[in-house]
Length: 84
Image 1: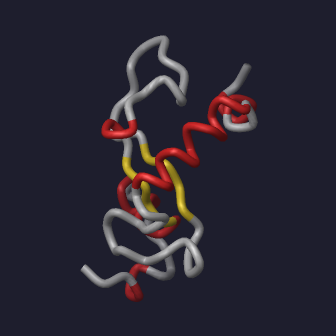
Image 2: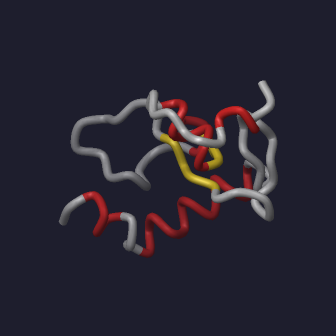
């Protein structure tokens, strides 16, 4: 199963919603709410052999699309809009 397939797994969906709920459905970095942005679960590190849902909620971060790209060093056209 590739990574994209794993993101369709019901265990990932449950974990993702747990992370979003724990974050109050807001980006941990810019504090934008889910109604304004697309939220992602960011893994700052990976453990060999661990599935994406086999982490503690405290080991991952809820980030909007723009902040998630920024974490990975990807320039986003909306970078100027993000308050830091």
